Image 1 (tube, rainbow, N blue to C red):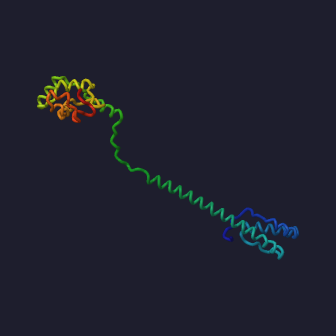
Image 2 (cartoon, rainbow, N blue to C red; image 1 turned 180 degrees about the horizontal axis):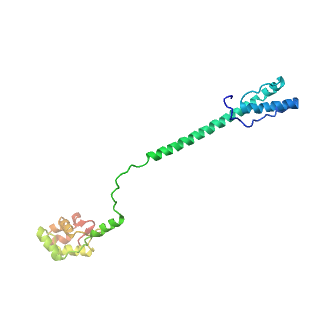
Image 3 (cartoon, helix red, strand yellow; image 1 turned 90 degrees about the vertical axis):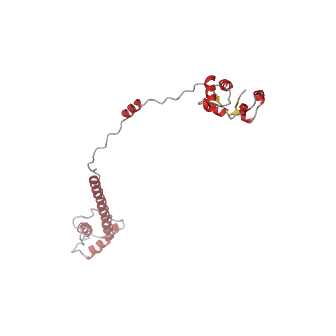
Length: 211
């Protein structure tokens, strides 16, 4: 405690049981004891030239003053720690700011903007979906002839025209593919006189059949 001269507690708690001690002292002695306590808090050194009674009374206040010094040192230590942390944070911020400065680099190439993208899209012709056009009997007949197929063109056209050119529940997209598929139907293998009576599993395509 003697190392701390300029900084010291400016108050200490006097317990109630010390009151009886003060009452037993003469007013002059009580004043001298209390002044000695405050001097001790200020200098950290026990006052000299005290009478035996004053020394005894002063000693009874030592626990209170030791507690005041202990709490004072705790407050000083906590304050220093907070200040140290604050300084460390400031140093970290300064260091991180210096290190985070990005080096000079070449400018990045200009990215394609939305307007440019739109202009590129406008230059490209839109994709057009081919619309299905039902074939004529002549077109089917020509296709059947080139393939050497046994499909009846008129019956093929009539069958799918009656169904709205649907294959099951799906609109037809390629009538030539449907014509090639019809070549496998058994009805084209039958003789004309037996064609209407032939109804086998091969006569159906996706739930459709010729009538």
